[in-house]
Image 1 (cartoon, one colour):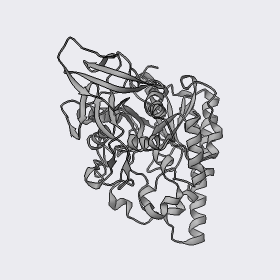
Image 2 (cartoon, rainbow, N blue to C red; image 1 turned 90 degrees about the horizontal axis):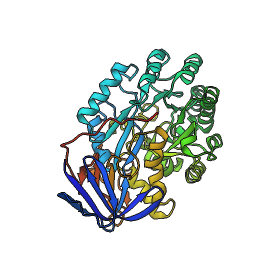
Image 3 (cartoon, one colour; image 1 turned 90 degrees about the vertical axis):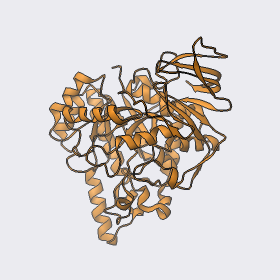
Length: 446
């Protein structure tokens, strides 16, 4: 494996920026320093006037394989990920068939091993009737990122609404439990009321149907279970001001038993955007009124919200063009997640150090990922070299998602991802891919 040395760059890591070189050797960071001159033949990359960041770790993606590969595959979406500076991801179980057994879960890992350009992990899915499989994950807690529980609307038998099953999951799982929290009964009531009131529904009705109360009640319920059993709970995609009262910044992240995630689209869009984007931004939980976005930003910056993710959820353009009730919920984001957050760095809303903390360091800490998420000697060389003075315009011809569209199309991002290293391999550089190596299965220290 080739050695590389990134020279004269601004290294963003653990709350500070230092200027120097990074030597990459045998998949790992061999040395960090100034004026490094390895006594080996190392390929030099000029990092002048650029930032070197640890690769983004996305804790929530939907890559649609198996069974939904007309929308996306592990190969296509991981390729889009590395082009956007995402070097590791954790993928959700709502595929076809859902990952409800260890046999099905390991089949996904095998697909990742064979096709993923980024590092990967896959959640075990929870249903009302697979508690034995859930408890078996305790035997593999260093090999699986977590257990996913849909406590709100989903498809098929992915909704877990049995109190007995929820009790058993929270009481018995030794892994992180990641929850989608929306109260199904509230959503159904709101949907019926809206249909009775106006008949034909439209995208702008989405945050009224899947409202703040539905999110709060479900998140509150999950936290009650977690506190009862001292479970390790991670609530995904927080969208409301009201939910933020449930989270604290009083403990260091490594000591928290209850953590939270915010997604880039909930930091970027508001309900005002349904008028122009319609079903393109229909997702669950819904993008809500502007005061919620303001509160999410405040909670992100003061550490009540712990990590930033995408909830990357591609659908075909045709599936998004159906009428509101039938249009599929979810939007593709992983290629542009880092670029979008760097847009807010440029605007002065957040520092680049804080972006790195929330998209790399905190995810590694939250999930106890082994030897990743930081620029440290001995850690895997998952690195991103970013030019903050070279804007990128999101266009149809440079979108890599299999679905071929983005709600951000036409937006100019302030930066260009020049290189992405995965395990010391420059999988993406100057717009070109080197697919000669695949990513690795993430390991956890629990």
